[in-house]
Amino acid sequence: MQVVSRCRLFSIFPQIINLHSLPKISISQNPNPKTRNTHFYIHASASRTFKSSSTTSNSASILAKKVLFMPPGVEPDDITEDMILPGSNIVVGPYAGDAKIKEVEFVKSSNKPKDCPKDERPEFAMLGRSNVGKSSLINSLVKKKEVALTSKKPGKTQLINHFLVNKSWYIVDLPGYGFANASEAARMDWSAFTKGYFLNRDSLVSVLLLIDASVPPQKIDLDCANWLGRNKIPITFVFTKCDKMKGGKAKRPDQNIRDFHELIRENYKHQPPWIMTSSVSGLGRDELLLHMSQLRNYWDNV
Image (cartoon, rainbow, N blue to C red; front, side, top):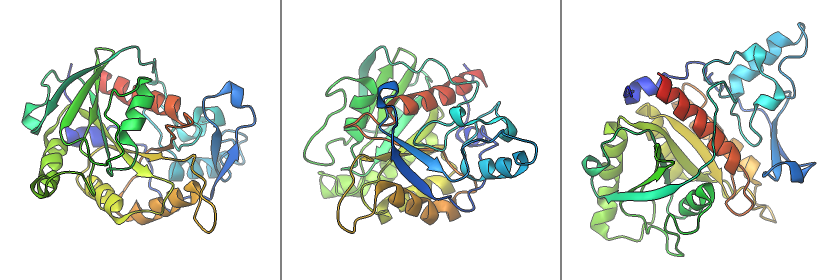
């Protein structure tokens, strides 16, 4: 397998178009919840159909370019509504394939990036604040309890943990940032420890940056997203806890997601893929795995 460098992978998806302004997003109940694992749909205004008539195709293509993540093999004029994953801006392309997880096994924990597995299998790194629900999402993806450690105390993951999926690719559980339950020295070393992994790991397909959508954008998340963008690290924003509709004056998850995009767009030349999830309801699980499959399959074929 040919190994793709970090910088080359960032340019793998040349059709990810600039986000100038994010259209209004709305959440509605799934009209037929028995047909899908998701409980909510997310809509970008005017995005119902991208290929409807010759008089509207040009404006629809412009809209698609502004808000959607388009993988290789997809042209804006060819996009139809059923190609867009619910609860996301991700278009499904020809590289999407079998997304089922049949088996998963823990391989090793590493306290230094140089100690990580060297078999060059593609990997997806899970990153987020210590209480963002990272371990719960991993357990939800693989449909096994306690594959990744979950705890009432944030910051239990303090090593780079590799899980081999279907004997062909890795999920990597990285230490959470923020108020980690670790020594002062360990907290001070986190930045160099994790950044070293991102900058030197040639088998990294994408970072899945988990963002808590139940709260307004946090500075520490914005700082992390901006650092990844400046260093051209491939990224997918995975918004967690999207089932939590807080009462009172608190903003809904879709509003927090809009605010987050507005705050990070200056540091992103192209609109990264993003998706809404919930480990409680199963929202976005199958869609996220399908997105990961097309990234992984393209990686294997370049």
